[in-house]
Length: 115
Image 1 (cartoon, helix red, strand yellow):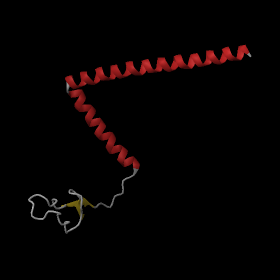
Image 2 (cartoon, rainbow, N blue to C red; image 1 turned 135 degrees about the vertical axis):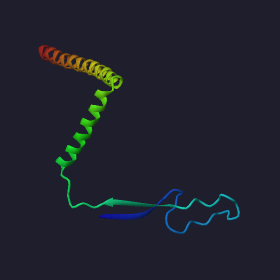
Image 3 (cartoon, rainbow, N blue to C red; image 1 turned 60 degrees about the vertical axis):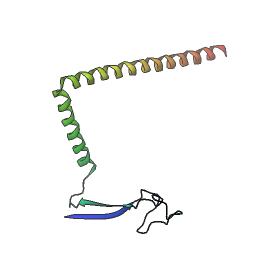
Image 4 (cartoon, rainbow, N blue to C red; image 1 turned 120 degrees about the vertical axis):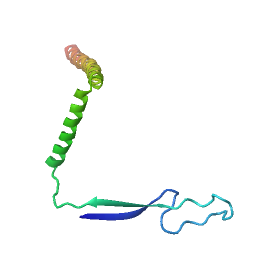
């Protein structure tokens, strides 16, 4: 069972069945193009999907994509390189954060000693 809906897609700055009149009616190309009618149909089902259903479908797509990557050696190699680059970047950021955290504790202990 399907249900459909129709609507006008506003392409030229107006919607509806009757276009606006041109300010130069005799000039070729001065009227805007008519709105495009679009018809969208959906398949009606009795099943309401839960969050777990959506997640399972998404996981299935992820697993299928993983299999495609593993099967293509060049694609897999690029993914491994990208993962290593990302890990290196994350390590640099983590080291910078650790440095900031240790400097803050040193500055706090120095201030407390001066008092």
